[in-house]
Length: 624
Image 1 (cartoon, one colour):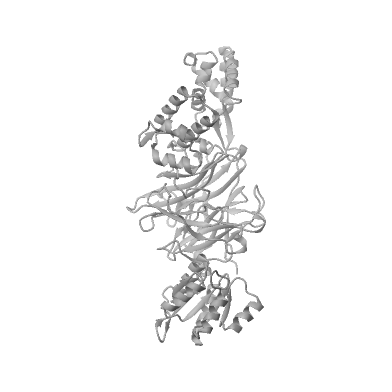
Image 2 (cartoon, one colour; image 1 turned 180 degrees about the vertical axis):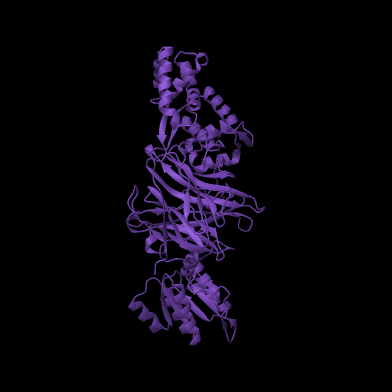
């Protein structure tokens, strides 16, 4: 029976009316100088008339449009000088007019509004009993499919109904500050990781810098290098790589009079020129109890992907920096909401296909080898797996919402449970998706896709914000009790160990070369009271049989070194009277007859159904 999914009536669709004013330089510097010359040819009266008409048409669409015009005039200050005019001698009105010609509107969410993540708002004041204020981040795309990060604020009530404030009329970009202190070794290492390191150039530019340096120091050395060196094409590319990476560190601040829906994090650094993708926000609690909000996201410039980290306490001030390390690559990194055994933990999908987990002492440096956590097992995830946001801590363990890609590139959401102490162990998994696109949701920019970047638990339900076909977004809730029952059918967490007459605890030898199967089956049986010994193949199984008293062998068939059939045949030849149960994904009537003739006591099909496995084993031990 499928799990109960309650789709909420709240939807977010793209809105072309949401615009920001961006700097605009059509055709490059030379054309810019021509535009300035034409503007300077206007009389003062005509210039003022043109400016006033522009302000009438656009001042109600932007907060303080004159400030934007003046900022954009400053961007072309050097072009005014290059066109033969003194920029400092111009009237304020003439400066504003020039700035307006180098400004254009960009509709940030005209094309799509999708890939949401949800966290608790830092401000939980003035709420009714049972309510929680939340912030939902979205990936918004406009012209040219450039993605930015936008927000909406809302409230979930005690019945898990969602209500969001109407979006503010105006949209604001933040003030950008670039005063980051860089560590030289990490900086050079990231250039190496991204294959952008030209030692000839970087040694000369960065050799004069200390172990730690500021952006302006790097910028000064670059300018000095350019003045003293003949710049070839390859050297120019190397310089661009240095500035490109340096620009990826910055801080942004929004005005305190902006509503959450009026704040947009638009691509700022060169590393982000093609967009900010799929921010996975998480409310992070540190060892001292302090709370911060982090988000991992992917920056893309049309050539290279750069994983980045956002940090904020209040959603007004944001610190942005790259994520370094050998394992900081590809999309889909998601941070755990607290440290595990004193270390940061992160999910990743570095091979583009499977879910991995990794640990670090530094939040933006991931050097240690990642561990394989989960591979595709079911038809709806055969193409690839990924996470759908940070894990959520529950009494059963870490609940992880996943996404899988199946036939016809159809995306579905699934769920697994990771061990609370050792999250490298998958202790529960649903065999079926928890959410697939229905007939209304499957039509869009990318058909047949549901996708999420972060869910929360509220009043015993899993609340999932999700994208519909990379076009719009909705919300769904799933009862936790039903979810856990599907994941751990009939489980009683206080179950006592299963005992036998001779040894006390019943010990099962699990023989399987699939590490994911090992983790899942071991967790199922250990929670039911059995002691488990694991062997990766038939040969190692013989070693374990010599070391332990084993009550039952639960074995895969197709394995390296020694197959399940060969293992059973060896046991029979040595008159070792231990019952053997075959567990395989390739069962056929012929295979089953062959194994039973050889002496196997039971056949079970993969993927294992926990309740069936436990019933079969219980019956076997009761009959022996």
